[in-house]
Amino acid sequence: MTKLLEVNGICKSFAVSPAPGQKSQRLQAVDDVSFSMLPGETLGLVGESGCGKSTLAKLLMGLLEPDRGAVHFQGLPLSGLSRRQRRPLLRKVQMIFQDPYASLNPRMNVEAILSEPYIIHNRPQDAGQGVQQLLDAVGLPQEARFRFPHEFSGGQRQRIGIARALALKPDLIIADEPVSALDLSIQAQILDLLRELQQQYQLSYLLISHDLSVIRELCQRVAVMYLGRLVEIAPVSDFFHRPRHPYSEMLLKALPIADPRHPQHALPAGEIPSALAPPAGCSFHPRCPYREQECQTSAPALTSLGNDHFAACHVAEKLFLDGLST
Ligand code: SF4
Image 1: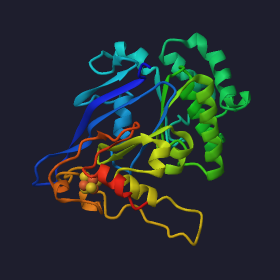
Image 2 (image 1 turned 180 degrees about the horizontal axis):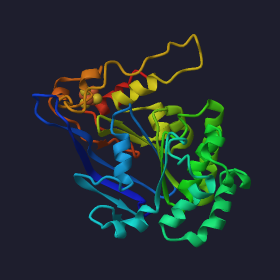
Image 3 (image 1 turned 120 degrees about the horizontal axis):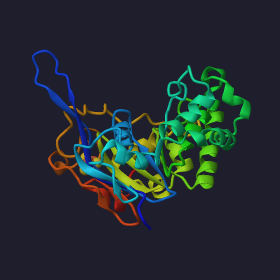
Image 4 (image 1 turned 30 degrees about the horizontal axis):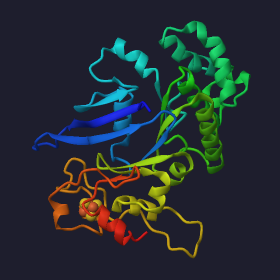
């Protein structure tokens, strides 16, 4: 099957203003990231805040150029194209944001918000019928078109954000923490809506979330990011039953369990190191309970462990045979 998205060795760093008297530094936000997605797939991207998830999303949206590596969408490169050449490709990749209120212009009513993508892409004649269909698709009444964002609840605003992302009939939607700002009951409704729309429009989702229960609910595969690198990619059931990377194991242990007698674990031990000065060798080694001598000097590559499961850990095979302590 033709890949929907292919990401090969992309890197992105940013210059950071130095403190007085210090040398300028670079922050390596995304470091040698490779993965692919198939049409119709939902891939979850997890990791603690500051691990590079949002920078990666911007690279995939074409909002940032990688320093190295390449992104291909439906076999065509995103890099090295003029704005004009890139526009039809970018139409096929849309985004849903975490904060539906901040991402909607408060001075525009819903009709103007949902018409905007058609106007930007020179299809104003499609806006009238398009807005009507979009409101139906996300379960909002037609009268909503004359109202402004502040007149809606958080869940309704997220429905408007989803409708806007759907306007240009994308093939891939990048959803950045799409339910984390919502109440639990509303979260479930929005996740159901995303699932229904996926069926109806044959969408693929890259779902960015720090919430593993959301990932388990919606995704077929999961990719784990730590300090700018992917450390594990696996089918979701494998990941939850047999994680192969110690960082994934720690994230899973921190999942709350609805039983007061069960010991609850805190988030991974120790602070996430600064991306300005990542540790040598495996960047997870200062926090890793399984670290060995070589972990401090040599960075492990993302390696296949069979069954579409990859991990970047020198001892992933051995840990799997022994069984992680999960
Ligand atoms: Fe831990 Fe070493 Fe594996 Fe890194 S390579 S996760 S430090 S065991």
